Length: 235
Ligand SMILES: [Zn+2]
Image 1: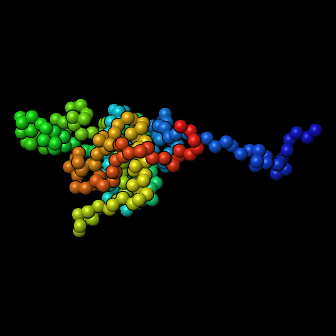
Image 2: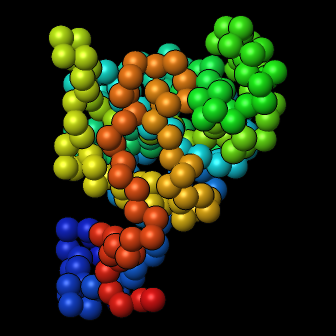
Image 3: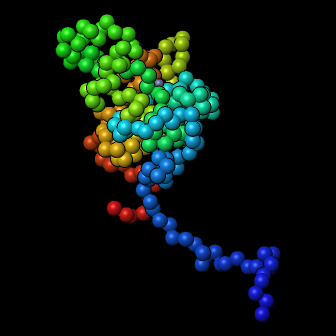
């Protein structure tokens, strides 16, 4: 009996016999800190990872000041950037592990000063501090007494331009809006935070006004949307 079959002479199985059962698996954060099963493009950029993240406890939204994802990804290799980048067409890139923090926030503003809740004496001292001293004063407070910082937040960059002449930012495309909402929905589920923990960069740090505004409307309390990966009838 001839047991060895040349590749060219072998027959493949009937397609009907090899069709695999389709199983539905919810997205999750893998051991490497990358989101699995959500259709994200994993493009690790080692220079971004700065050390173990605390939490994370919050999300910070940014706009890139670029017209393409590739120029933003190039600049990430310089070591400043976010865990996620959302392209004009809605493609979501993950560039750093969620177990690590990245440099994306810079010095944080004083939350109690912004919200008018500081003790009078502290407010007086804070007003005399520059950004770096103010940051050092704030960073030792527990969250959410202060704004989130690099060490405990997930950063999301959205590809968008700033227009000097009108001092305005590109609005997100419908695809970006949908991807931002999907990503934040997942992060809220993974880490148990809420919409109150989602911040615009320019709210928490000294950045161009509007940089992180208008990207996410929030959906706490809204009926659970059916996500694209929720096929089938599993509970
Ligand atoms: Zn920013």
